[in-house]
Amino acid sequence: MEEILLRAGALLTQAGACAWGCADSAWLLPRMREEAREKALEQMPGLKRLLCAAFPYARGTERAGRISRYARGEDYHRALLRRLRPAAEALEALCPGAVFTPWADSSPFPEVYAAARCGVGKLGKNGLLLTRTAGSYVFLGFLATDAPLPVTGGDITPCRGCGLCEKACPGGALRDGAVDPEKCLSALTQRRGALTQAQERLLRGGGMLWGCDRCQLCCPENHGLTAAPLPEFARAEPPLTEADLALGDRAFRRRFTGRAFVWRGVQPLRRNAALLQESKAEGASADHMPRGGNEERTNNYGK
Image 1 (cartoon, rainbow, N blue to C red):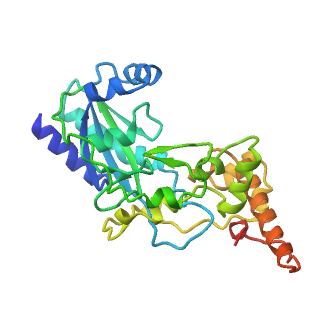
Image 2: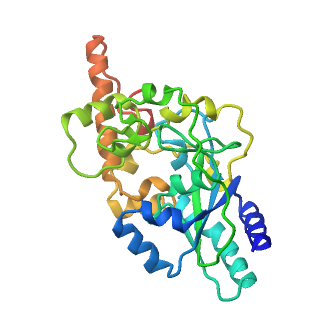
Protein backbone atom coordinates (compact mmCIF):
# COMPACT_ATOMS: atom_id res chain seq x y z
CA MET A 1 0.00 0.00 0.00
CA GLU A 2 2.96 2.30 0.36
CA GLU A 3 3.28 2.44 -3.42
CA ILE A 4 -0.44 3.28 -3.76
CA LEU A 5 -0.03 6.11 -1.25
CA LEU A 6 2.86 7.57 -3.23
CA ARG A 7 0.81 7.28 -6.39
CA ALA A 8 -2.08 9.02 -4.64
CA GLY A 9 0.24 11.86 -3.68
CA ALA A 10 1.47 12.16 -7.25
CA LEU A 11 -2.09 12.25 -8.57
CA LEU A 12 -3.13 14.91 -6.05
CA THR A 13 -0.07 16.99 -6.90
CA GLN A 14 -0.89 16.59 -10.59
CA ALA A 15 -4.42 17.77 -9.75
CA GLY A 16 -2.95 21.01 -8.40
CA ALA A 17 -2.39 20.31 -4.70
CA CYS A 18 0.54 22.06 -3.02
CA ALA A 19 0.47 19.65 -0.04
CA TRP A 20 -1.22 16.36 0.81
CA GLY A 21 -1.41 13.65 3.47
CA CYS A 22 -3.42 10.67 4.67
CA ALA A 23 -5.45 10.65 7.91
CA ASP A 24 -6.66 7.60 9.83
CA SER A 25 -10.42 7.23 10.29
CA ALA A 26 -9.76 5.60 13.66
CA TRP A 27 -8.51 9.02 14.83
CA LEU A 28 -11.13 11.04 12.95
CA LEU A 29 -14.40 9.26 13.69
CA PRO A 30 -14.33 9.49 17.53
CA ARG A 31 -13.77 13.26 17.18
CA MET A 32 -16.84 13.81 15.01
CA ARG A 33 -20.40 14.54 16.10
CA GLU A 34 -22.71 11.54 15.85
CA GLU A 35 -24.66 13.01 12.94
CA ALA A 36 -21.47 13.76 10.98
CA ARG A 37 -20.07 10.33 11.76
CA GLU A 38 -23.22 8.64 10.51
CA LYS A 39 -23.17 10.69 7.32
CA ALA A 40 -19.52 9.83 6.68
CA LEU A 41 -20.12 6.09 7.13
CA GLU A 42 -23.29 6.22 5.05
CA GLN A 43 -21.42 7.87 2.18
CA MET A 44 -18.35 5.67 2.63
CA PRO A 45 -19.13 2.29 4.27
CA GLY A 46 -15.94 0.76 5.60
CA LEU A 47 -14.16 4.12 5.75
CA LYS A 48 -10.51 3.64 6.68
CA ARG A 49 -8.57 6.67 5.45
CA LEU A 50 -9.04 10.26 4.36
CA LEU A 51 -6.64 11.64 1.78
CA CYS A 52 -6.32 15.39 2.40
CA ALA A 53 -5.04 17.90 -0.15
CA ALA A 54 -4.52 21.68 -0.13
CA PHE A 55 -5.11 23.68 -3.32
CA PRO A 56 -3.72 27.26 -3.46
CA TYR A 57 -5.77 30.31 -4.33
CA ALA A 58 -4.81 33.95 -4.86
CA ARG A 59 -3.34 35.47 -1.71
CA GLY A 60 -2.67 38.80 -0.01
CA THR A 61 -0.54 40.34 -2.75
CA GLU A 62 -3.64 41.05 -4.85
CA ARG A 63 -5.41 44.40 -4.82
CA ALA A 64 -7.60 44.99 -1.81
CA GLY A 65 -11.31 45.03 -2.49
CA ARG A 66 -14.75 44.31 -1.09
CA ILE A 67 -14.89 40.60 -1.92
CA SER A 68 -12.61 38.18 -0.09
CA ARG A 69 -9.84 36.73 -2.23
CA TYR A 70 -11.13 33.19 -1.93
CA ALA A 71 -14.41 34.17 -3.62
CA ARG A 72 -13.01 36.13 -6.58
CA GLY A 73 -12.47 33.13 -8.82
CA GLU A 74 -14.50 30.07 -9.69
CA ASP A 75 -16.57 28.45 -6.97
CA TYR A 76 -14.00 26.23 -5.29
CA HIS A 77 -16.51 23.46 -4.58
CA ARG A 78 -17.00 22.59 -8.22
CA ALA A 79 -13.41 23.43 -9.23
CA LEU A 80 -11.92 21.07 -6.63
CA LEU A 81 -14.35 18.27 -7.43
CA ARG A 82 -13.44 18.61 -11.10
CA ARG A 83 -9.77 18.23 -10.16
CA LEU A 84 -10.30 15.42 -7.63
CA ARG A 85 -12.52 13.11 -9.69
CA PRO A 86 -9.78 11.98 -12.15
CA ALA A 87 -7.51 11.19 -9.20
CA ALA A 88 -10.28 9.14 -7.58
CA GLU A 89 -10.91 7.23 -10.79
CA ALA A 90 -7.20 6.52 -11.30
CA LEU A 91 -6.83 5.23 -7.72
CA GLU A 92 -9.87 2.98 -8.06
CA ALA A 93 -8.28 1.52 -11.18
CA LEU A 94 -5.06 0.90 -9.22
CA CYS A 95 -6.96 -0.65 -6.27
CA PRO A 96 -9.65 -2.94 -7.67
CA GLY A 97 -12.55 -3.17 -5.24
CA ALA A 98 -11.58 -0.04 -3.32
CA VAL A 99 -13.64 3.15 -3.40
CA PHE A 100 -12.30 6.74 -3.41
CA THR A 101 -14.99 9.38 -2.89
CA PRO A 102 -14.11 13.06 -3.50
CA TRP A 103 -15.26 15.84 -1.19
CA ALA A 104 -14.76 19.61 -1.31
CA ASP A 105 -15.62 21.69 1.74
CA SER A 106 -19.10 20.23 2.34
CA SER A 107 -17.83 16.97 3.81
CA PRO A 108 -18.89 15.72 7.27
CA PHE A 109 -15.24 15.57 8.39
CA PRO A 110 -13.41 18.03 10.66
CA GLU A 111 -11.48 19.11 7.60
CA VAL A 112 -8.88 21.50 9.00
CA TYR A 113 -8.05 19.16 11.89
CA ALA A 114 -7.82 16.15 9.58
CA ALA A 115 -5.43 18.00 7.26
CA ALA A 116 -3.34 19.22 10.20
CA ARG A 117 -3.26 15.74 11.71
CA CYS A 118 -1.82 14.15 8.58
CA GLY A 119 0.86 16.81 8.09
CA VAL A 120 -0.62 18.99 5.35
CA GLY A 121 -0.02 22.09 7.47
CA LYS A 122 -0.10 23.74 10.89
CA LEU A 123 -3.23 24.69 12.79
CA GLY A 124 -3.63 28.47 13.06
CA LYS A 125 -5.19 30.34 15.97
CA ASN A 126 -7.70 31.68 13.44
CA GLY A 127 -8.93 28.14 12.81
CA LEU A 128 -7.29 27.95 9.38
CA LEU A 129 -4.73 25.51 8.04
CA LEU A 130 -1.30 27.00 7.38
CA THR A 131 0.61 25.22 4.62
CA ARG A 132 4.31 25.71 3.99
CA THR A 133 4.14 27.09 0.44
CA ALA A 134 0.65 28.67 0.27
CA GLY A 135 0.01 29.58 3.89
CA SER A 136 -3.68 29.73 4.73
CA TYR A 137 -4.63 30.70 1.17
CA VAL A 138 -5.76 27.17 0.33
CA PHE A 139 -8.94 25.23 -0.29
CA LEU A 140 -9.11 21.73 1.14
CA GLY A 141 -10.17 18.72 -0.91
CA PHE A 142 -10.51 15.10 0.22
CA LEU A 143 -10.71 11.54 -1.01
CA ALA A 144 -12.43 9.24 1.48
CA THR A 145 -11.51 5.60 0.97
CA ASP A 146 -11.93 2.11 2.36
CA ALA A 147 -8.40 1.26 1.26
CA PRO A 148 -5.99 0.76 4.24
CA LEU A 149 -3.34 3.21 3.02
CA PRO A 150 -0.39 4.14 5.24
CA VAL A 151 -1.07 7.12 7.50
CA THR A 152 1.08 10.27 7.37
CA GLY A 153 1.79 13.00 9.90
CA GLY A 154 1.19 12.61 13.62
CA ASP A 155 0.44 15.13 16.33
CA ILE A 156 -1.12 18.39 15.18
CA THR A 157 1.43 21.21 14.94
CA PRO A 158 0.13 24.61 16.09
CA CYS A 159 1.16 27.92 14.54
CA ARG A 160 3.65 30.17 16.35
CA GLY A 161 0.82 31.62 18.43
CA CYS A 162 1.67 35.30 18.00
CA GLY A 163 -1.96 36.34 18.45
CA LEU A 164 -1.91 38.90 15.61
CA CYS A 165 -4.96 37.34 13.99
CA GLU A 166 -6.94 37.68 17.21
CA LYS A 167 -5.98 41.35 17.46
CA ALA A 168 -6.81 42.01 13.79
CA CYS A 169 -10.26 40.37 13.87
CA PRO A 170 -12.77 43.26 13.58
CA GLY A 171 -15.46 41.43 15.55
CA GLY A 172 -13.26 39.78 18.19
CA ALA A 173 -14.42 36.40 16.94
CA LEU A 174 -11.14 34.50 17.46
CA ARG A 175 -10.29 32.83 20.74
CA ASP A 176 -7.72 30.02 21.04
CA GLY A 177 -8.35 28.51 17.65
CA ALA A 178 -12.14 28.76 17.85
CA VAL A 179 -14.23 31.09 15.69
CA ASP A 180 -17.46 32.61 16.98
CA PRO A 181 -19.73 32.85 13.89
CA GLU A 182 -21.89 35.44 15.66
CA LYS A 183 -18.91 37.83 15.66
CA CYS A 184 -17.05 36.75 12.51
CA LEU A 185 -17.28 39.38 9.76
CA SER A 186 -16.85 36.77 7.03
CA ALA A 187 -19.69 34.63 8.39
CA LEU A 188 -21.99 37.61 8.88
CA THR A 189 -21.50 38.90 5.32
CA GLN A 190 -22.86 35.55 4.12
CA ARG A 191 -25.79 35.30 6.49
CA ARG A 192 -29.34 35.64 5.24
CA GLY A 193 -32.07 37.10 7.40
CA ALA A 194 -32.06 39.53 10.29
CA LEU A 195 -28.92 40.64 12.11
CA THR A 196 -28.54 42.21 15.53
CA GLN A 197 -27.68 45.89 15.80
CA ALA A 198 -24.15 44.95 16.88
CA GLN A 199 -23.75 42.73 13.83
CA GLU A 200 -25.00 45.47 11.52
CA ARG A 201 -22.48 47.89 13.07
CA LEU A 202 -19.74 45.36 12.40
CA LEU A 203 -20.80 45.09 8.76
CA ARG A 204 -20.93 48.88 8.39
CA GLY A 205 -17.39 49.22 9.67
CA GLY A 206 -15.97 46.06 8.10
CA GLY A 207 -15.87 47.42 4.56
CA MET A 208 -16.65 44.06 2.94
CA LEU A 209 -19.44 42.89 0.66
CA TRP A 210 -18.46 39.25 1.10
CA GLY A 211 -15.96 37.57 3.40
CA CYS A 212 -12.98 38.96 5.30
CA ASP A 213 -9.22 38.52 4.85
CA ARG A 214 -7.86 40.36 7.89
CA CYS A 215 -6.72 37.39 9.96
CA GLN A 216 -4.81 36.08 6.94
CA LEU A 217 -3.26 39.35 5.82
CA CYS A 218 -1.63 39.96 9.21
CA CYS A 219 -0.37 36.39 9.70
CA PRO A 220 3.46 36.13 9.67
CA GLU A 221 3.16 32.52 8.49
CA ASN A 222 1.62 33.88 5.28
CA HIS A 223 4.82 35.71 4.31
CA GLY A 224 7.33 34.40 1.78
CA LEU A 225 4.91 32.01 0.09
CA THR A 226 5.91 30.36 -3.16
CA ALA A 227 2.91 28.36 -4.42
CA ALA A 228 1.17 29.94 -7.40
CA PRO A 229 -2.63 30.10 -7.29
CA LEU A 230 -4.49 27.72 -9.54
CA PRO A 231 -5.84 29.41 -12.71
CA GLU A 232 -9.49 29.10 -11.65
CA PHE A 233 -8.76 31.10 -8.49
CA ALA A 234 -6.49 33.82 -9.90
CA ARG A 235 -9.20 36.09 -11.29
CA ALA A 236 -9.69 39.77 -10.52
CA GLU A 237 -12.45 40.90 -8.22
CA PRO A 238 -15.73 41.04 -10.19
CA PRO A 239 -17.10 44.60 -10.54
CA LEU A 240 -20.49 44.21 -8.88
CA THR A 241 -22.73 47.16 -9.73
CA GLU A 242 -25.93 48.55 -8.27
CA ALA A 243 -27.72 47.12 -11.29
CA ASP A 244 -26.32 43.66 -10.49
CA LEU A 245 -27.58 43.82 -6.91
CA ALA A 246 -31.00 45.00 -8.09
CA LEU A 247 -31.48 41.74 -10.01
CA GLY A 248 -33.81 39.05 -8.79
CA ASP A 249 -32.19 36.04 -7.18
CA ARG A 250 -32.44 33.76 -10.20
CA ALA A 251 -31.12 36.41 -12.59
CA PHE A 252 -28.26 37.23 -10.22
CA ARG A 253 -27.25 33.58 -10.00
CA ARG A 254 -27.27 33.33 -13.80
CA ARG A 255 -25.24 36.53 -14.12
CA PHE A 256 -22.51 35.24 -11.80
CA THR A 257 -22.86 31.51 -12.25
CA GLY A 258 -19.85 29.55 -11.07
CA ARG A 259 -18.78 32.17 -8.48
CA ALA A 260 -18.47 31.30 -4.79
CA PHE A 261 -20.36 34.40 -3.60
CA VAL A 262 -23.65 33.45 -5.29
CA TRP A 263 -24.48 30.45 -3.11
CA ARG A 264 -26.56 32.56 -0.69
CA GLY A 265 -28.20 34.52 -3.50
CA VAL A 266 -28.28 38.27 -3.93
CA GLN A 267 -29.97 39.27 -0.66
CA PRO A 268 -26.94 39.23 1.69
CA LEU A 269 -24.82 41.17 -0.82
CA ARG A 270 -27.60 43.72 -1.37
CA ARG A 271 -27.97 44.21 2.40
CA ASN A 272 -24.21 44.50 2.90
CA ALA A 273 -23.94 47.11 0.15
CA ALA A 274 -26.73 49.14 1.76
CA LEU A 275 -25.02 49.02 5.16
CA LEU A 276 -21.71 50.12 3.64
CA GLN A 277 -23.46 52.97 1.86
CA GLU A 278 -25.06 54.04 5.15
CA SER A 279 -21.65 54.05 6.78
CA LYS A 280 -20.22 56.12 3.96
CA ALA A 281 -23.11 58.60 4.16
CA GLU A 282 -22.77 58.88 7.94
CA GLY A 283 -19.06 59.57 7.58
CA ALA A 284 -19.70 62.27 5.00
CA SER A 285 -22.34 63.86 7.23
CA ALA A 286 -20.02 63.82 10.23
CA ASP A 287 -17.39 65.63 8.16
CA HIS A 288 -19.99 68.19 6.98
CA MET A 289 -19.39 67.10 3.42
CA PRO A 290 -22.12 66.84 0.77
CA ARG A 291 -23.03 63.36 -0.43
CA GLY A 292 -22.01 62.47 -3.96
CA GLY A 293 -24.07 60.70 -6.57
CA ASN A 294 -24.77 57.00 -6.68
CA GLU A 295 -21.74 54.76 -6.91
CA GLU A 296 -21.79 52.54 -9.94
CA ARG A 297 -19.48 49.96 -8.35
CA THR A 298 -20.88 48.67 -5.06
CA ASN A 299 -17.42 47.20 -4.40
CA ASN A 300 -16.38 50.77 -3.57
CA TYR A 301 -18.90 51.25 -0.77
CA GLY A 302 -17.26 52.13 2.49
CA LYS A 303 -14.01 53.37 0.96
